[in-house]
Amino acid sequence: MTDMKVNLGGLELASPVVTASGTFGYGFEYLGAVDYSKIGAVTAKGICLEAWPGNPMPRHCEVPGGLVNAIGLQGTGVEHFLKYTVPWFRQQVKGVPVIANIWGRSVEEYAEVAARMGDVVDAIEMNVSCPNVKAGGHTFGQDPKVLEEVVAAVRKSTKLPLIVKLAPNVPSVVPYVRTCEDAGADALSLINTLPAMVIDIERRKPVLANRTGGLSGRGIHPAAVKLVYDAHAVSKLPILAMGGVAEAKDAIEFLLAGATAVAVGTATFSDPGTAGAVYDGIADYCARHEFSSVAELTGNLLV
Ligand SMILES: Cc1cc2nc3c(=O)[nH]c(=O)nc-3n(C[C@H](O)[C@H](O)[C@H](O)COP(=O)(O)O)c2cc1C
Image (cartoon, rainbow, N blue to C red):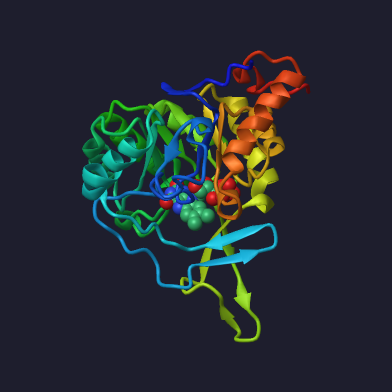
């Protein structure tokens, strides 16, 4: 029997396979459709201070190799999340940790949402791919100085394991990884969606009401593997890798590139059983290659 436990920056996971934020609702929507014993943690949809409607429709479009979405971080707001969503999930699904994915429009908002989480959730994942309204709308995760400020502020406001979800559309991920380490992050997650656009040529209009969106799914997987490899090469922070995991092979690539755990996102929409199948496939790979523990795969690349 392979030991499938991993430790993601202080968060103990019974399985190295978790769900990706925004692709698994608040965790209970898949009750009856998935085997939660194979899911290490559920990462909830992005949460900010207030309830937020997201972008106008249409806001997603399937493309070859993936999905372009511009949901725009629709969410219930932190109060509802803490009072109803998490307790309801805990009542329905025993023993599966909850990772709260948070976002804000300013450094102060991030810190406040994190502080309000208290110890109701098991870890915080900061989505830094959103615009900073106090800095002309520039994305937090695309300026190392701003990233340092926001990660340090959240670090001060929570004792929970802190995972920073990095933006993939940067020339090099290295300065951002180092910044997170210095500012007190416990782990990294990467990658978020890649900026994308789809045009309806007959109408000569963008397909999404928001015009642009983010690409996820199988097509982004090799780009994500490269970013995980680059991040692991310069940092000891554990990595939660995501981007196009649809079968065990994809997850094992991430682990060998340096990830400690993997998240399944877009693939869940076409097959809710993906995370469970990925778990089984990793266990089978470990048995075939005589690894007694999945943790032995991390960064175990023969180069
Ligand atoms: C519909 C949709 C909604 C998403 N919402 C969020 C979100 O709220 N917060 C976040 O950090 N990432 C969000 N993501 C990004 C995913 O968590 C993940 O990083 C990305 O989709 C890559 O993984 P995948 O290719 O397996 O989907 C969303 C992705 C999709 C497709």
